Image 1 (tube, rainbow, N blue to C red):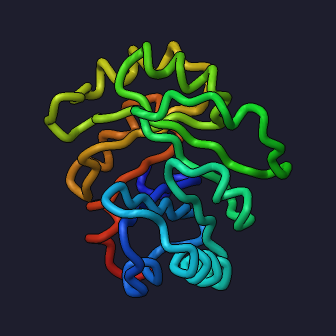
Image 2: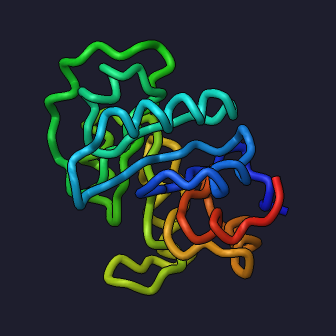
Length: 180
């Protein structure tokens, strides 16, 4: 079964110890907060907590801050089409992840030199809904690792095996997880 992926990516918008404690070392926490500015003390606290738990920690949409605070990487949402970060100097294992909804956005993320691409939405029926077949078709055109995002739950996790996804990402899948 595909329930034990090598890597999982969990989006959070606030620190909740109980949810982070449920995650294993193969989970990467991505802190995204689009409603307010980042509080550096809060980010440092989450970083240190994740370090104790041996979990990688990324922030969204702020590569400069991620480098400054020596985080494990950064996440570029699909609406971020900025190329300024290409002039930055990254540490060797700095992880740069982007998200895309279609082939045009995949090409932008590849030009931004991301390591991995979240392709959404595989199951969540919204404006960006792809489904399994369209997900597979679009993911074949990517040179980067493609990660399934959007509506992944315990009920449909087995269907990920039918895709070209190397990992999974989400929110609800991780919050309903019980035990380590």
